Image 1 (cartoon, helix red, strand yellow):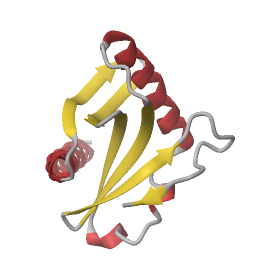
Image 2 (cartoon, helix red, strand yellow):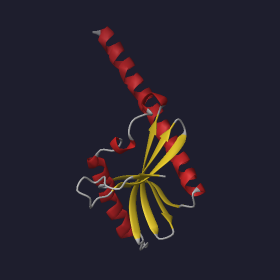
Image 3 (cartoon, helix red, strand yellow):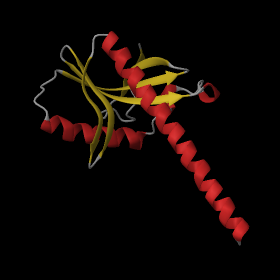
Length: 146
């Protein structure tokens, strides 16, 4: 019994260390994504927004466009995964619901609202504009890499 307690504690410690490493990787990717977007002329409006309906990593504007950004970090082991498959439709739906709450509180009246993905692979951001469209039947029509 004592041996199983030790192994359970070691497993919890490993999981905790893995969680912390993933959290650090995600935060680093979000900082890189924000800097990348600023260099492209976007203004950061908000970061790590939490609402009762979901979380949004970054909220940015450029001209008359408001974009809700989901940031995903990938290591070299899984860097070849197709960006379109990184965020399941139910996650995009939560982000869209959270965006509705944020927009109700904000005083912005954008002409264009987008849901973008920034994939950070090996430290290099890749911007997928219009990665999700809530009004499209599959939610994925029109994604484009930029």
